[in-house]
Image (cartoon, rainbow, N blue to C red; front, side):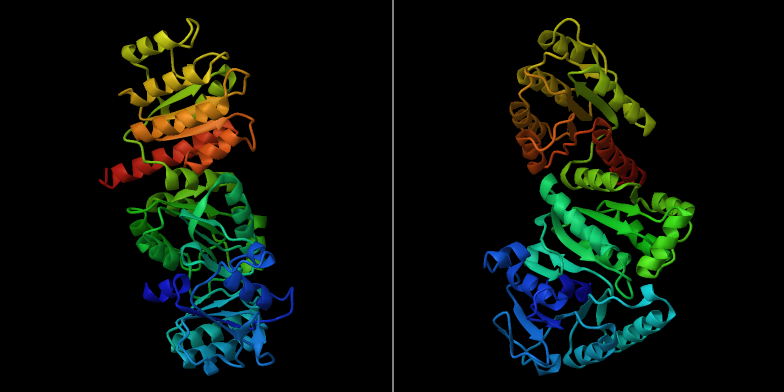
Length: 468
């Protein structure tokens, strides 16, 4: 794992193909490493990598205020990692120079390899052979790069850096990476590691999840997969990793046409989706089938505790959303708990006579934040309830922000998992507060249920393995 660690925690980074020309990839990557993000650079805030940075360009003496070298071999100190932003025809020679210099790891941003057909595949194999000669590990080619928030390292050509947090993400698509970063700001998701792996000529999904298992900042591993070059290696590794940390994978290319698009995108063969489905299930990897499922499951597994049992309660102020949530619970193979007489008696004391008296617990449309608060405390402390899905349809009496404060306090006091849907409410202070405190809050009831489903599936896997 030391060779993989050098990607995420290097002491020095060289950018081969660094450029002073705005708009060039070599310029963007170098400045991202120096400043941390495009926004920092625009505001002249140096918030990036704290180690040594070496621009490599034979036609420049100085780039972005840092001394440049005409070859990595000329750098006077050791170099842990090199980022290549040069034409594909020059990559082989650069890898040779990196080997002579003693570089441990290389990120190849450049495209034009196996995704382009036989000629590109031949060049990619030659580069891999040269790297193995010098015991160098490679991420890419044809990738966005990597981001290590806890090392203040943005070795990518993306325009932003995600906040620090408990999720490590690896994606075969670089464009998806940039979209996930933007989504993460809105949803208050934080990342420990962020990797675009492109063609996976060397370092692949299995190598990364093995490293993420040992990373103390990682609580959940999130993957976007178009194909696996060594499926057996991945699933054997995943089988070990998921015993310690949950892995959520979104495998695309499950239709015939999608599989064809995969081949042209990263030069890979997608393979049988039925085989992937079976292998995911056998290895304990939680499979997401849409991007929203990927985000919702990962957020729940990264921020919420695993429930001690499968007994779920739904708390709502409206019948319709409660029915929608209940349908989703049962369609996913989960169950709603039966309320005990003691719990119903406690709810009788704080609810109007016409409350539902069953699960879903409908405390009626005129519910105030105080009634929600009381009902949630009752459910979260009830012995027959292991987890709660709370739904709020907006009314003038509800006061969502006050309720959000109480949800967080009760969750922290009881330690039971909770998923929340403030139905139809978007970009509100209440939702932002819940998201910032690690409570999955999603405007659609079905998605809140799916977040809870990920936690229940984690419980089932841990029980099956004798780990709970």
